[in-house]
Image 1 (cartoon, one colour):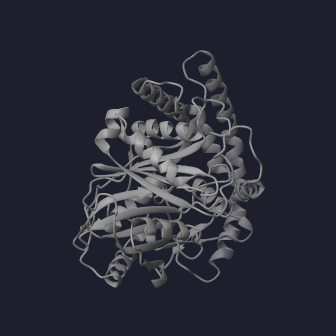
Image 2: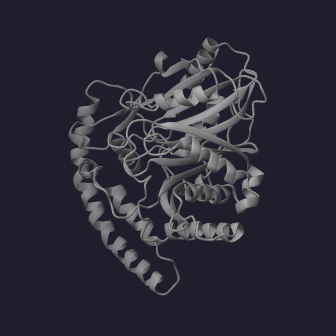
Image 3: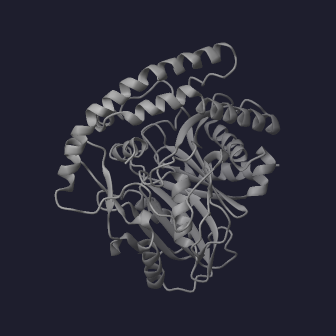
Length: 454
């Protein structure tokens, strides 16, 4: 595993981070048992879903991807009376996180579901793909789901990049390029010995890369001082939603036409951030100082399996600006500035040093993380993750996809997160929140009102 993916994997024990990708289909002509059987067969045919994680004793080396056969219990069927009940059952399912040492995915099938937004009175079949974040980021997970629900196998299909920052993805029918080991006796011991031999080399690589990273850091300071690059904001002041969320979750979804979001912000992501800013400032009754922690895609890695290739950046929601157009322009400028900072040689050099760290040091850093510490500032008062999941050409039997949504995980300092997920011409603004902290019904109403505002 790469250092980025393994950090995500190890951190999941501290901050649960499974992804839940929701897809709703109308016109499905299969029984619940047939849906489960069909999806299990499709999943078994995808190389990305025939994996599990092999830990190395003593964390002497990074964990390895090994082959794993899908298990029948990975596809679970739930009976949901209606859309609200479906979301309630899914919120409960979020408490059962994956053990990646056994499996990296699970499917939840909810049927029959009435009152799904956009279903026009038809009953729907809702499928939620639960996936370990170590396997893929939001873009990669969406690409795997596209394979799962595609009726044909071809190459070249891609998923749009997070936060509108480019394209990255996975063609259907793609094979995993990360070295995947078979389950052989003594494999973990061999991996540990390999890690022992690799550690001095890794330390040498860190020492060799450190001077370049230092020079790049000094260059970044000079670029900021000369005005060639903006400095990152120091962060946001924590507010009432920046507290530990507890164990309970509540979900909500507001569907919006993609064209409307583009009219508001010039892009789906900026338009969504304008709406989130309006709803959040109304809910908190504040008119300044709100920021969002936004997932921004990085260029795809040249090696590895689907993997994680993104970073989180702080974006000013500009809620002190009453004019929507000017507010959108400020948000767009902040996103662009964050994107430019992300391509600076200093960021590239620092990332190279982190990738070279021996596994035992990375593991120590994760174990040293104290989730109970309350920082004076946060990157954002809420989280927004935006992914375009492509054309609305996905199928389940004769059923056609009508809606997709996603619910970014909560963390010790985030009790309210947002997903922005589009398929075809419809975008779902999704909310995941702690009902102990947020009145989700009231907040959803504010979000819907902001989306409808002219």
